[in-house]
Length: 306
Image (cartoon, rainbow, N blue to C red; front, side, top):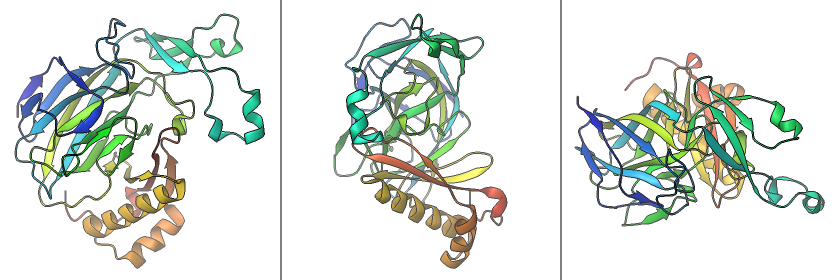
């Protein structure tokens, strides 16, 4: 397997069938970097238009429609010493009569200690600046080209992935995406040093990132909505609006995953999920919301397929 050190020169604010930035083999590792959500690089210079610009796309040899693309996030970490966030929660996550009490929206800056892995608010005199937040690096937006020549904005998400802003997309996680075009065309960007559930201010602590990932082709694996796993859990991700639709997509995909990969009937999976399912809130800020349904592997029988 090869290791590719890729220096991006062009970024995309849609996920679609763009000209491949690099062709890689099945199982190769890519080492590269991403600008932040406003298009700023490691020096803080804006080098591309804002809007969750994506590095890539990466053409994975052998990936074809009907396959799944498994991507392991081998390393994700901020690469500069200052990040930023919005300063106020979205009006739709609080009571309507509370909205008038919210402050005017501005940007906050955060000092990032890359060696110690700590973030601190840079607002003099604010009690909030006394707290040091441990890094929990994650990738907010990634995906593969959707079918039919679509190019979908990186502001939103759907079956192909996109701007899901789930804080569980950490280093060590493997995500599974449905391949709709030859080569899959994987895009990645929008790194956060830290983010709470829901991304309720519309950002995590946004910062440019160094990333290392390994894509693998899973032949003839039908994935309808994004799936993921870490050492402890399997997950299914539903994107849509309203939020109950996200729950439906995520739960359905998790039950299919348990049937296809663990041999559990829907009656079996209902018995387990009824007591053991956990739901994590991804993005509730952007046009499509995200919900994650997950279950611990220790409650499942041996896996039937990789």
